[in-house]
Image (cartoon, rainbow, N blue to C red):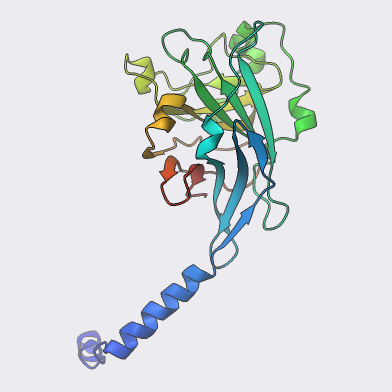
Length: 259
């Protein structure tokens, strides 16, 4: 009864109070900050990294932004080479995140497995380790990813993900895929999310998207299955998105909902 009596005496919201609340909300949003990395040339355009923080300064997303023209004038497969890499640094200002640097891999002819990822596409590697450590990654052959020495523990793998043979790549690591993803079920590959490991540790997060999907100017987002634990302390994404912005004529690949 006391609670109901007290509630009945609460003053109604006035227009002035609503306006103040709206102003406070707008002020908080205005305090959100965007930190940008140094641009890197790609195709006929450029790309750079972005970290966004909330009003308290906490990182809420990690992104890769590239201009529409970055999809033009890309190198073509020649002389047995079909993959081309572009390394991007993180913003020098603002808070640090789990991501040390980003590498865009332009796969002009795709890569294995056949009839899955063998179409022109981009691998967006968000590395958790330094470039010097990444470049030390070496394998005897691509099948080494199936060896017990490269299999991460169950708590580091999201439910449903596996590290199959044939995914060991020097300078990267081994790749964990979701065999239930649409592209493994006979559907065309558009965008997907992969986890990467080396020496049983999580070392990169990898959204992928085809060139044709990007050229369709998508507004795509999806949840990211999360493992029970991570090798490196910090906040990790719960979703990712691939979006085209008409106003800026640019694309943004985002790791969002950091937790």
